[in-house]
Image (cartoon, rainbow, N blue to C red; front, side, top):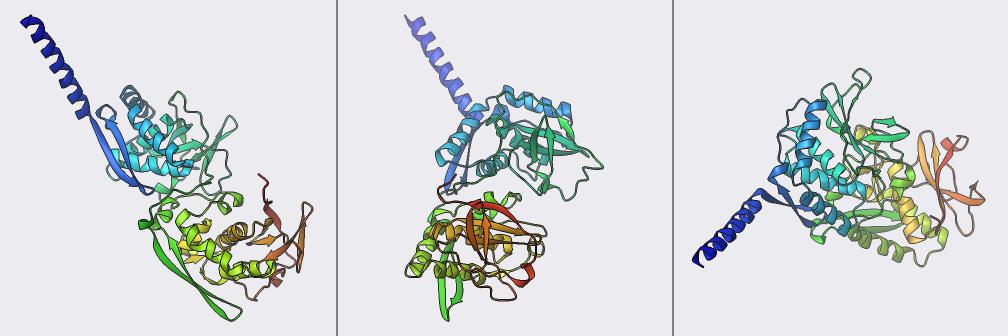
Length: 401
């Protein structure tokens, strides 16, 4: 009997010892993201070293070691956070970046950090690929979106867009062609989308107040808009996407509630054309104008919320903000009118006014939200664009998907 009890005790102690050892192998990473605390378990079996010079063999060996380890708790934690917070792909990728940074800091070993991003994105189901050019590790993902200012390659009719080109000051792909790294990741088939249909629910404490002022019909208006610098961070490396995609990136709830109800209140007693004119003058005069190349050193299309955040903005940004304001306040049909060097908005009023554009059977009046040499009224075309050819970048019809 004593022997049996002794054996049972030893077995119990062995189980406890193994459980404790297993717990010691798992590190819980905790960090702030999108107004919440993320807790990500990382098993010691997926902590691996990597030589800073990437090769096909080294990448394959790194993947084999991680895939043989206990990586599922990590993937389950970040995908559960993604699903519960309804994160779009671009915002989920920011979560992956933060997770990879916690596991393998970027400054310590950039290649290893990039490999962890690739591994986490691939094991989340996305078709992510790697390539090597001049001993530099490039990270791609399958995407069906129109992307304009970053490298991509085509494979079997599918587009793979580079996610980390911004990390390199200069890389001559013509001189050093990208050599694909072939690693078979089962289940990694999903295309990545840059479309953002919902902003995260940041906490109110993360916001600050920005004062916006402008004059309309000899009356001064002052707005205190709640803005969050995390939005700037989230979109730092966001590429140039098509106009429809970035025009329709929504405001976060705190920013929305601090601005849209106030604008609705201001225009509620105005006739439709005058109310839209008010929104046009707000967009035109409440912000400082500057070309993207002078501010960012490159073309950068900002979402409506980014335009509210930044001190300077150009015609692309004003057009996006004005479009969003008209959509939220009046929900009228609109088209984005693209000239060779300029973009503006035309609105489909209940009763057209001024010079109009006919498009797809609808009539639109031009509304210029960017400062011009002349104070353009609703329905008027700036002289410098009067005889210039244009195209319609996209059309918005309320209720039409």
